[in-house]
Length: 77
Image (cartoon, rainbow, N blue to C red; front, side, top):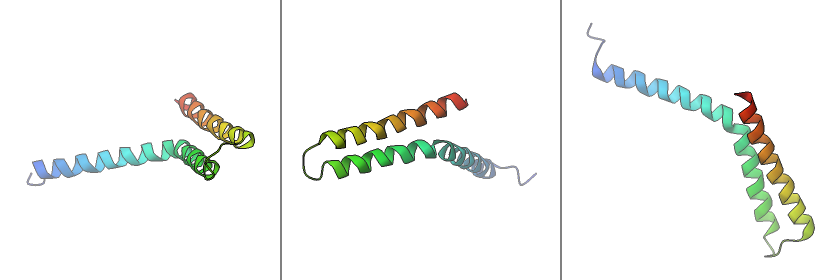
Protein backbone atom coordinates (compact mmCIF):
# COMPACT_ATOMS: atom_id res chain seq x y z
CA UNK A 1 0.00 0.00 0.00
CA UNK A 2 2.99 2.33 -0.11
CA UNK A 3 2.09 3.29 -3.69
CA UNK A 4 -1.15 4.83 -2.39
CA UNK A 5 0.02 8.27 -1.32
CA UNK A 6 -0.95 11.89 -1.72
CA UNK A 7 1.89 12.64 -4.13
CA UNK A 8 0.92 9.72 -6.39
CA UNK A 9 -2.69 10.93 -6.32
CA UNK A 10 -1.49 14.39 -7.38
CA UNK A 11 0.48 12.87 -10.27
CA UNK A 12 -2.56 10.88 -11.37
CA UNK A 13 -4.72 14.01 -11.21
CA UNK A 14 -2.19 15.93 -13.33
CA UNK A 15 -2.13 13.15 -15.94
CA UNK A 16 -5.92 13.06 -16.13
CA UNK A 17 -6.19 16.85 -16.45
CA UNK A 18 -3.48 16.86 -19.13
CA UNK A 19 -5.32 14.20 -21.10
CA UNK A 20 -8.59 16.12 -20.92
CA UNK A 21 -6.86 19.30 -22.04
CA UNK A 22 -5.36 17.44 -25.00
CA UNK A 23 -8.80 16.20 -26.00
CA UNK A 24 -10.18 19.74 -25.77
CA UNK A 25 -7.33 21.12 -27.87
CA UNK A 26 -8.00 18.58 -30.62
CA UNK A 27 -11.69 19.42 -30.55
CA UNK A 28 -11.20 23.21 -30.86
CA UNK A 29 -8.34 23.11 -33.41
CA UNK A 30 -10.52 23.90 -36.50
CA UNK A 31 -12.01 26.90 -34.71
CA UNK A 32 -8.60 28.22 -33.69
CA UNK A 33 -7.35 27.76 -37.26
CA UNK A 34 -10.22 29.85 -38.62
CA UNK A 35 -9.65 32.60 -36.04
CA UNK A 36 -5.97 32.68 -36.98
CA UNK A 37 -6.90 33.07 -40.65
CA UNK A 38 -9.17 36.01 -39.80
CA UNK A 39 -6.37 37.71 -37.88
CA UNK A 40 -3.92 37.19 -40.75
CA UNK A 41 -6.43 38.51 -43.30
CA UNK A 42 -7.12 41.57 -41.12
CA UNK A 43 -3.41 42.33 -40.70
CA UNK A 44 -2.89 41.95 -44.45
CA UNK A 45 -5.84 44.24 -45.21
CA UNK A 46 -4.76 46.95 -42.78
CA UNK A 47 -1.15 47.25 -43.99
CA UNK A 48 -1.98 50.41 -45.93
CA UNK A 49 -4.28 51.74 -43.20
CA UNK A 50 -7.43 51.52 -45.33
CA UNK A 51 -9.96 48.79 -45.86
CA UNK A 52 -11.14 48.53 -49.48
CA UNK A 53 -14.45 47.00 -50.50
CA UNK A 54 -12.78 43.80 -51.72
CA UNK A 55 -10.83 43.51 -48.45
CA UNK A 56 -14.05 44.01 -46.48
CA UNK A 57 -15.72 41.22 -48.40
CA UNK A 58 -12.74 38.92 -47.91
CA UNK A 59 -12.70 39.65 -44.19
CA UNK A 60 -16.45 39.06 -43.98
CA UNK A 61 -15.97 35.68 -45.68
CA UNK A 62 -13.33 34.71 -43.13
CA UNK A 63 -15.66 35.75 -40.29
CA UNK A 64 -18.40 33.59 -41.78
CA UNK A 65 -15.94 30.67 -41.82
CA UNK A 66 -15.39 31.22 -38.08
CA UNK A 67 -19.14 31.18 -37.47
CA UNK A 68 -19.41 28.01 -39.54
CA UNK A 69 -16.68 26.36 -37.46
CA UNK A 70 -18.50 27.34 -34.25
CA UNK A 71 -21.77 25.91 -35.57
CA UNK A 72 -20.05 22.66 -36.54
CA UNK A 73 -18.52 22.46 -33.08
CA UNK A 74 -21.86 23.05 -31.34
CA UNK A 75 -23.80 20.61 -33.51
CA UNK A 76 -21.32 17.77 -32.78
CA UNK A 77 -22.38 17.70 -29.14
